[in-house]
Amino acid sequence: MKHGLRMLGRIAVAMMVVAALSLPAIAKPKVMILATGGTIAGAQTSQAEYGYKAGSFRVEDLIKAVPQMQELAEISGEQIVSIGSQDMNDEVWLKLGKRVNELLQSPNTDAIIITHGTDTMEETAFFLDLVVKSDKPVVLVGSMRPATAISADGPMNLYNAVAVAADPQAKGRGVLVALNDSVHAARNVTKVNTSNVQAFQSLNRGPAAIVNTGKIVWLEVPGGRRGARSEFSISNLNALPRVDILYAHANMSEDLIDAAVANGAKGLVIAGVGDGNATQKAIDKLAAVAKKGVVVVRSTRLPSGLTYRNNEVNDDELGFVAALEFNPAKARVLLQQALLVTHDPREIQRMFAEY
Ligand code: ASP
Image (cartoon, rainbow, N blue to C red; front, side):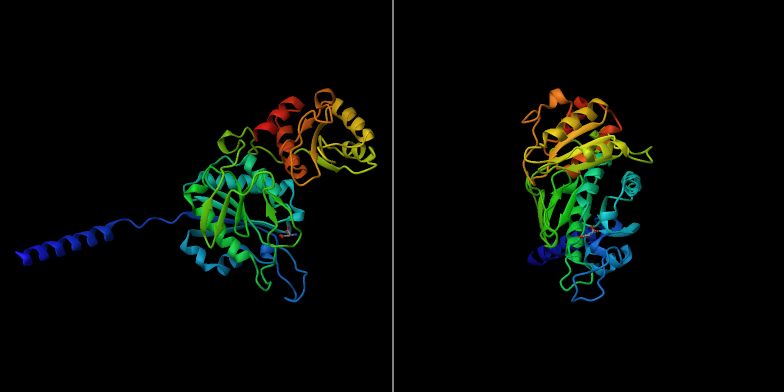
């Protein structure tokens, strides 16, 4: 009797083993790394020197440097450009945005990582947040120390970015930025330090997630409109409208406003003092150009806080748009997209409230 039961037990175990072996292995997500350069691909002439050249290594080198990420995902790579992100421009944005949309339409890509310099990372991330027509994860990653540095931060940042991109919970959170164990929503994040590895923060809202050696704790889902719900599209575009940013200060003159408009700016963002203000001379000139159809958005040169409508400046009367949560760099990105749809400041104000 006992022997019979033991036999039955063995048969059951054997059947379970056979069943487990015949189960299809869970496929790893397919993650494409699009490389654009930046310090994460930077090389120094000497490890004892601060100086380095951004964008010296190619995507294959970055992938080879972190073999551990192959355990998290099936990785492939493509070089888009090799630049320091201070040279990022509309042409590269359009190329990158179109490629991201094309890749994400295919079942062969589950998520995208973009390696990017940190200087304009928040702008590229927000541009993509507005124009990518998919809910699949898109994660921008960079580093503050070049790839050749003693204690380079790029490899761990890249590993964490892959973990984030491969996580099913990253879907639908918009474009993300992952550096130094924190993950930020594109619309919220800003660079806050010139050289420290802790260089990114979401000042008005806080991070989207914390990630430590690939282990993620998700926090808030970002607000704003994006993905399939975005009204912006770049599929037929070869250029974006010119929008300039003017930095307000004590004794600001109106000359640079004239110069920007004379050089073809269709929109102006003012990095205003305090709650988005400027000298009376500058405000008068901005109101004059707004009457002629140039769209004027008031943002603030301060790192945090909102620029509210009709605070010290009467936006209703002067025809301005208030940037609300967006800093000048982000306001410029959104205004470029908005101007492709309308020049009506009230419609553009709606967009600033929705995205
Ligand atoms: N200048 C570099 C860049 O933005 C800085 C960096 O990547 O950290 O490309």
